[in-house]
Length: 172
Image (cartoon, rainbow, N blue to C red; front, side, top):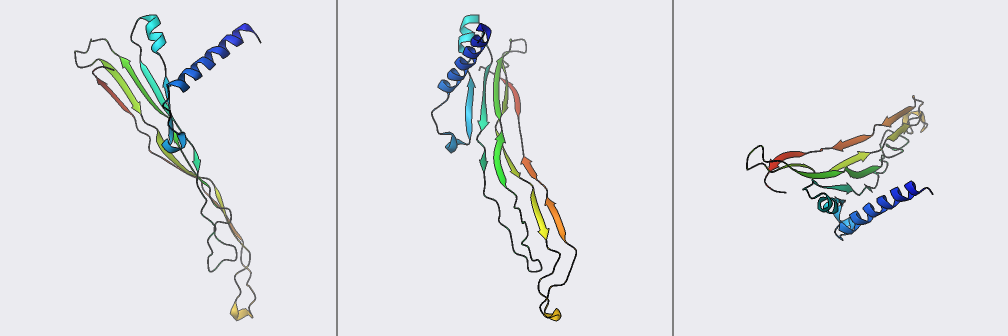
């Protein structure tokens, strides 16, 4: 392995270890999101200046149970032969606070952006089929009547409501 590759790998592992060590010790499954702080304290001390504070949230994906096929009275094959699979996760969140020079006055010392993690609900595509026969017909001695076969694709669904807040205020 080249020395530059080793150095890059060591820097990435150090950053990941620092980020993991700074995270609170709460179980990820109970929270729904995993906080990811960006540690810039060492850089602030070495440069001797105030740097932005940054952090984020990564959502934990979870799958749901699909809604099973439903029997319909006028069909031989149940509705939703291949059910849609629901999955829930989220869009990652971010929080950034950057210092501003006091050019705007005393009340405006930082610029902040908050974009909280947002829930995303999805349903995968499904399939609806119907046989080319009707249910047994009592007028036809209990035999089914022929009809045109039917096939349909249930479209996937994506629902989300992302939001963000940009503001100015005092202090970090």
